[in-house]
Amino acid sequence: MTLHQGDCVHLTSDEHLYQVIGVDDHQNRCWVRRWPMARHGSPVFEISLHLVDGLPTSHQPSPEYAVGALPSDA
Image (cartoon, rainbow, N blue to C red; front, side, top):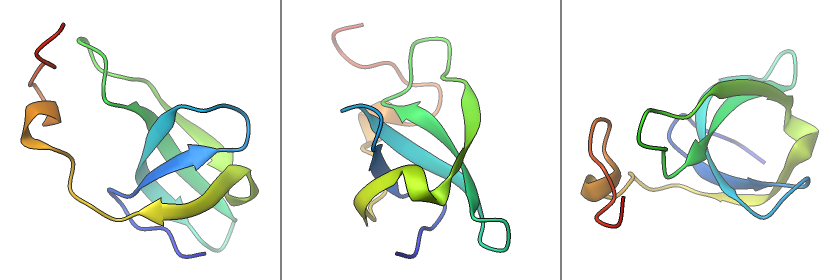
């Protein structure tokens, strides 16, 4: 599986959606944050690529979830 910055993925540990922030193929690690982001941002954390479940959805986040924007129900 090839991950790219901006991909949205699920993890094997839960059902939430996460956005890939960075990838280190040499160390088999990536950095993700929960998506859509919370009102005050979502913390970024490092995980093993083995914890990514399934194929990523390569798409740009919706404009309503762009950095600094809030979901309409927030």
